[in-house]
Length: 201
Image 1: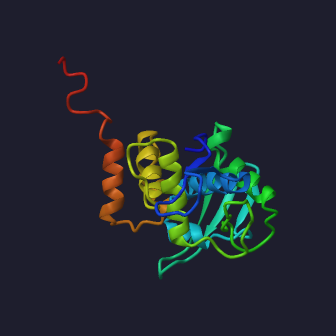
Image 2: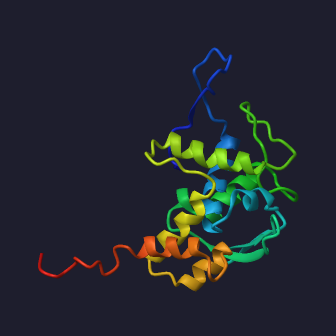
Image 3: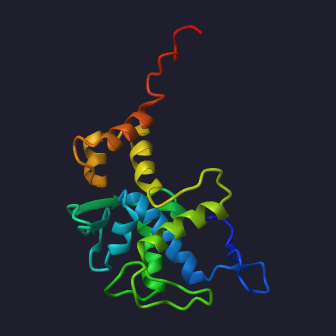
């Protein structure tokens, strides 16, 4: 998603003469950071929208992120390690966006218009969802990703890589008895010691 084409189709019903336009550099950097960091913190769209620059600090191993309390849910502080690949590393993508947008304080993710002008307000939860959905569309993914896909993605992918459920649950902020969380864990474990694997078929 982070290396997909920067070409964006004009919205349906748009009066623009061009049927598509190039995503500005600043918007591209914001989208790369939002997609990777929301995955890294297993964040809801409302939580990603509420992130602040002051709440994201750089440490030697990666980022320490304060995820604010949203809609009565308890806040949490999580760590996001450096990734192996620069294009999908949440730490590098955040630092590139922060530098390009000259962010010192306030909302971590802000609107960027089609000409590359940075807004001063907070990108709304709906705006965060749209960023993820459009990034998936530009990448040509068959599945339609939403703001919630990042949470499910981290848990299932993490479990496939052997991450402990309690670590994943702490990252996502799910309750210990959350049926949704355990469903994601089961999805991640589906091919682990599969019933038909290695039985001589």
